[in-house]
Amino acid sequence: MSLLDRLENQKNTPQESTQEQNANETSDQYLYVKRKIHTDIIDSINRRGKSSVDREEMRKLIQEAVQEEENGIPRIDRIRVAAEIFNDILGYGPIEELLDNPEYSEVMVNGPKQVYVESHGKLTLTGITFRDDAHVTSIIDRIVSQIGRHVDEASPMVDARLPDGSRVNAIIPPLSLVGPVLTIRKFGKIALTAQKLIEFGSLSPKMLAFLEACVKGKLNIIVAGGTGSGKTTLLNVLSSYIPADERIITIEDAAELQLKQDHVVTLEARPANLEGKGAITIRSLVKNALRMRPDRIIVGEVRSEETLDMLQAMNTGHDGSLTTIHANTPRDTLSRIETMVMMSGMELPHKAIRDQVASAIDIIIQQTRLRDGTRKITNITEITGMEGDVVSMQDLFVYDTEGKLDSSGKFKGEFRATGVRPHCIEKIKQNGVPVNIDWFTN
Image 1: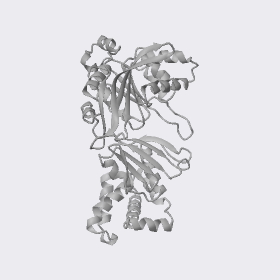
Image 2: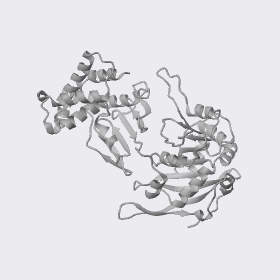
Image 3: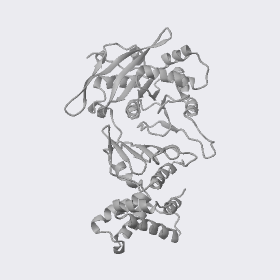
Image 4: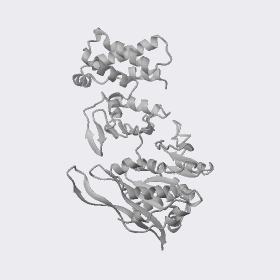
């Protein structure tokens, strides 16, 4: 859909009832004049028969309209009103200012009258509102149409991303009973570095040194954790340790990884079209990646049948692969992997699956968002093999806390090496990476 088509749709969007409109006009004294300017600008562009309008030209048209005395906008409010009109036409409406604020890591729109933000791990209700459901839906449509996706009653759920890489999920009625719901996990303007993670208290220097050796030493690593625990951020940091002379293939549902190496091939899954055809799954991309001569395969997240293909890749010479998974503990990670392998349709005995897991995966990193809002690596766990029918593992590093808060409202705790010498040290050394035994002592 072209820009002018979207503008015309905005103009023709049904207005809310008189009662709702009066209530909104009370909360926004310039609502009527903003709508009038919005409509006048679209009519002006259409009369001139222009096929496209750039952002600067639109900004100029809005500023000229706002400054007209007949619109009755006091000088002190003109800059703000012009920005609001521009955001409604070409930006992301009322939430534009939230997306521009680096303090907020997530923006959550629960229908038109509830907009929450996450800052430093805590949720806060803002005073920002939309006019009505149609207003929220128009912003959702603007976001998803940028990458060729759509949302309507036939396809009421959609994943997308903003131009800066921020992850977007939207779900609309009839599935949502509170109106259109929009969740945006913002992508930082500047990618977090390993040093920043140490400063934030996410892990200790010894843990980071060991993880760097694991990546350079081509161990297969899974980052596990709950929603919003920082898995992708950590995956980005770990990926930065991959040598620049290796061919890296990344596979994601919605591209988020920010690798700085030169030789990176980025693949992205594709949903079905309006006719329900044309879907390209993560599993298909993993299979295809094996034919692309990868040195490393990085899957943004395994959540279904592609897990089997990822394990097979790890077991067939593609060492140094990285991925993330939703799981609450390292042991839970193994259970989740086993369940997802069974979803592939392969009739494999449980022991065969566990054998594959034990031989494929070297390290599980457990990432956790604590109740105080901080994100920490709570376990670095090594897979050591099989004991009977059970995959054996051992913790190398843990985060210990008594659950007590300090004066700043954060949990008191410390990162601790368990004193165990990892079996994987030999594999790391064989790949020419030095290991310091002091990492594993306190």
